[in-house]
Length: 416
Image (cartoon, rainbow, N blue to C red; front, top):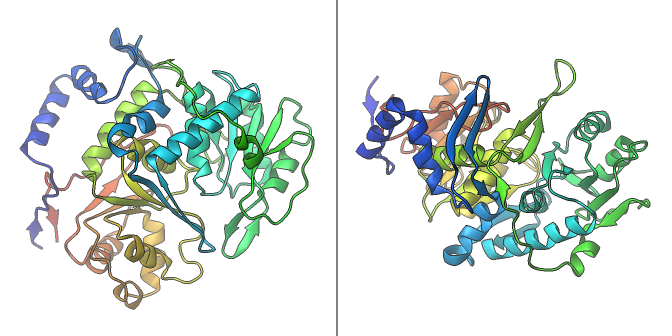
């Protein structure tokens, strides 16, 4: 076994950064928080009464502002999201276009009576309207709770009921393995006797025809006359940003509440450290936004850094087992972030499939989720990365919100 060091832009300063973090973690995170845009600087970096911690107490900011408005001056025309649907539909949205949609939808929510602190459940497929909904909630101080669009009506009901959401945002349907998943029908069943749900907003993705009830309102109709400017709420650092529920496999799902200032500071820093993100990168995380990876490293982390990213709706092996490699070739992906489970599946399909695509644009590979076994790691490195791309192996969970452990190329050596 030999050892190689892959330098992708990290250097001696990062070793110094580690030493600073070890010597005084409160001062360290105080400095990291200055990378965000604050309306008011905090009075106290950390207020800690174990096990409860409040970060940047007294400071005010807004997550929508930090992901969109801060990018308007330099990146207004830069592509933010390259979207491809499972059925081949494609869209491209710039930072300015997403900012406009978020402003309009924030005003839509306000017109329906959504106020600061209200909860909104989002049950959408992987379409741009999903991050737009999240950021619109963040803009007005509403708390979003995203539910994976593959969950049943009972699972959805549990989450709507527990959060007390007054609005549910869904679609007529979404595509999965060539089939239409009828999301609107699932919502109808989930809320049939939940009187506190005031409205259901329906985005027409599949246009297969749905029955509209008295609570239902169509996304496009609401957006037609929505005002194009919505001032972001100046929110306390500790103001809740979102609730994300655990899977519920061992009992009733538990809602994990994440704040704003500390969460965003952590994501801004860890996304930069782990991915060494550059303005020229095209980033692709294959996670669904319904999971914490999608919240942190599809929506908030990449957008705070003004990244261009691919967002894909559908199964990774449909309509055939080459789908992921075709996406990487078509969009010239430079950073690919996926799960060991997906890699094990791709590995079973054989080397000839990825070898038939041009994957030379890749410069960094990542894994997230369960531990990656050595055989799959070697395959990922040799067949997908062509022995030139370092691999970061990241760990965290719903409860922590962002990366807790990861190797950093350029600082650690990789044994081969």
